Image 1: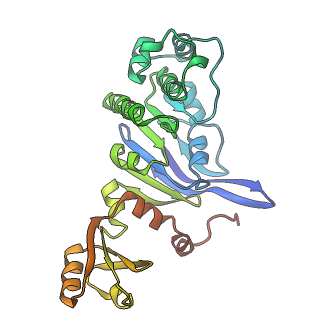
Image 2: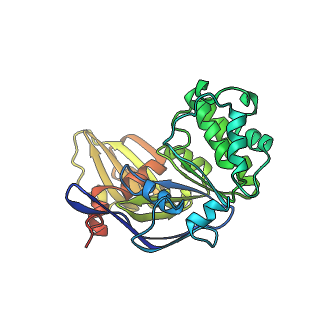
Image 3: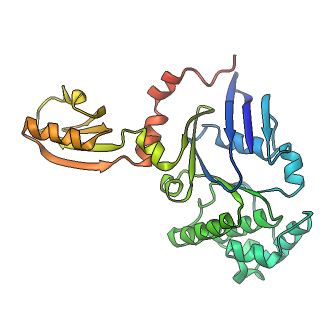
Amino acid sequence: MEFTTAVKTFRTAGRTVRAVDGIDLTVGRGETVALLGRNGAGKSTAIGLLLGLDVPDSGTVRLLGRTPDRAVRAGLAGAMLQDGRPIPRVTVGELVRFVAALHPHPLPVAEALALAGVAEYAGRRVDKLSGGQVQRVRFAVALAGDPELVVLDEPTAALDVEARNAFWASIRSCAERGVTVLFSTHHLEEADAHAGRIVVLDRGRIVADGSGEVIKRSAGGGVVSLDLAGRPAAGLDSLPGVTAVEVHGDRALLRTDDSDATVVELARTGAVRGLQVSRATLEDAFLLLTSPAAGAAAGPGKEAE
């Protein structure tokens, strides 16, 4: 899967907006990749380009060595998208069997049902299932063609905690078969726990690409917080290791790439109250990478030239 300087623009509210703004991205076979971004960051547009639902205005998108539309027709890619309603009066087994028959080399229906965790209600009508169960059926449909790439758009949006855990177990089983998995999600903890690689989009551009640990280090590596107890925050930004300072009421939060050095110097200055030390989370890094300040530093990315 490869994007080469891909650009896609749309005309809206009297402006031309670059939904995808020059993306360069290569994903190897067998990777599990999370695509993160705020609403409007370009995730859905990028997925649409990848699946051949749209074409780039410039640049190229290749999927397993082919154009996306040809790769999808060949059954090399399966997708589980947010949109779509359950088909009435059709059982789960009938639906998956029908979709499998459309592909040249389908996965055995029983295997697709088992991988998606829906074998137990194969005989039930799809339109009589719960929202979470329908999500699992969509996953079975995505697997029906025995694809080499599975694209999942917000796959756990309708699932409770137990169902999410079961769903990710299914994804792991799929990945263990060598299938490349690309999923978008707003649940950052899911991306951190289940993706070997995370790509963060903002304003149509890639602003981070790496493992969860690498991206978390971009937020400073650690967080040291303390009570100011009425004292000014001036000078905290000059402490060893500190990369950023945030003040919330009477509490200061220091992002640091050397928590030990920061704490030692704070202790030396004395009068430290309510000290807490923690690692930066993926949420910390995500908010930092997609902040208005970060976007301004990166330059304009919305208006087409």
